[in-house]
Every structure is written in C-alpha cells, then in structure tokens.
Image 1 (cartoon, rainbow, N blue to C red):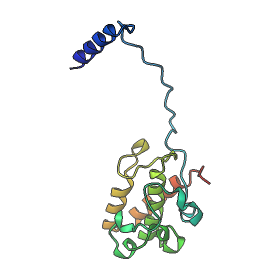
Image 2 (image 1 turned 180 degrees about the vertical axis):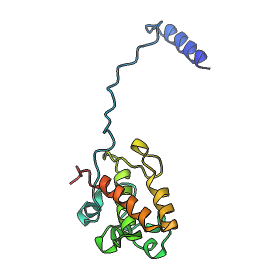
Image 3 (image 1 turned 135 degrees about the vertical axis):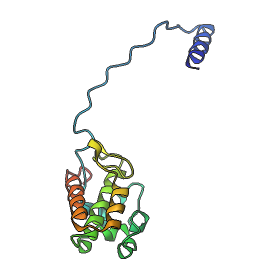
Image 4 (image 1 turned 30 degrees about the vertical axis):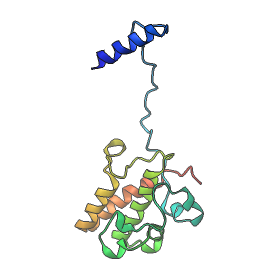
Length: 164
C-alpha cells in the first residue's frame, strides 16, 4: 500500500512539474530525550485549592465530584474536587490519598506541566496510572498502601509549580 501511495505521489509531482525526489529524505536529528523530561513539575493541593487558581484547571472543574474518579468511600465521593483538596479532609488514610490524588489528576491534566504521573496510563519511569491505582487502593483499604502511594503523589505534587 505504501509503495502505491509513493508511486502516485511521484507521478502527480512529475506531472505537475514539481521537482521529484528520488531518494528518501534523511530525517532531521532529534535531540536526546532528557531523563527528567516529564518529571520535573507538579503543583501541591494547596495551589489547586486556591479560588484564584481555579481558572488554571484543565479538563476538570472545582465543582466536579470526587466520585467521578473514586466512588468509594462514599463520604469522600460526595465531595467536590475543590473541597477534597483542603487539608481538613486529610486523615492519614483515604482522605489524604484522595487529596494528593486530586492534585495529581489536575497536574497530569494540565497541558503545560511536565508531571511524571498520568491519569489513566503508565507514567514516566513506569509510574502507575493515578485513577485506577487510587481506586484499587481505596477499595482494598490497606492503610500502609494508601499512605505509601499518597507519599509518592505528594512528592510528585511538590516538584515545583511554574503556574503560580
């Protein structure tokens, strides 16, 4: 199929009087990818919870419910994202994990941030996808696993926020 497309393009170019390239072009050199590309920026929950920063949210809204991502536990699922980001909901368990996860989701959704985690896909250096990992941890409700992953997300959320 690709030979047919190349042949047709060659004939069209020749008939139109355009110069015909007989060799495949050499691809331009691409710069080596930095080991830190995609893993150098992240904004804390306190940044995302500030009303003046709500305009910086991409793909999500402050009044969306946590349950859109995490239907369990139910008491947290009924919170709006902006409220879930507040320190008052940290409890060393599910609330802390959800707070860090919502900030991580906002970081991953922001087009201009070089954030190491992804919402639904494996992230940089094989970091687990945020939403399915947190949903599973909340369902299993093993305190150590929740606090460990919350700490990982917290570290990524504290990489440095170029947005404000």
